[in-house]
Image 1 (cartoon, rainbow, N blue to C red):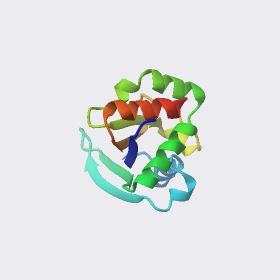
Image 2 (tube, rainbow, N blue to C red):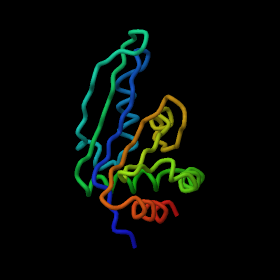
Image 3 (cartoon, rainbow, N blue to C red):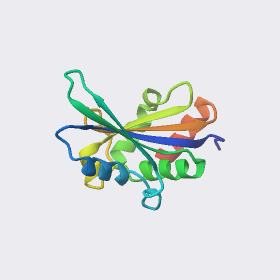
Length: 146
């Protein structure tokens, strides 16, 4: 059994001028465990794109290991089976040398209450940070992905 453990999670979404801030916030909250949705540390940063278009960066974090672990379990267990299989087969592309795992979730699907992987641009980026060596994190994730 792996000794790796999630220690924090950060959800990041870009909100473009044409998007409704409340809907994007709802999408981000929808990919969190229901009992933790009111406990996230949420921050907003205003910036501009390449053509000076306004962009808001929404970040939500859990830095408590129990909340991070619960969030990891929630995301992986609510993913469709084909997404779990896809992620398990490409885990090395999502796992860096510092034991961080990066997952991109479809923002539109999240708004509808579904957790679905995406490789497009309209995503919620989720970064899980782990305590443990990369191989231990990979072992844990493969076990969780089934």
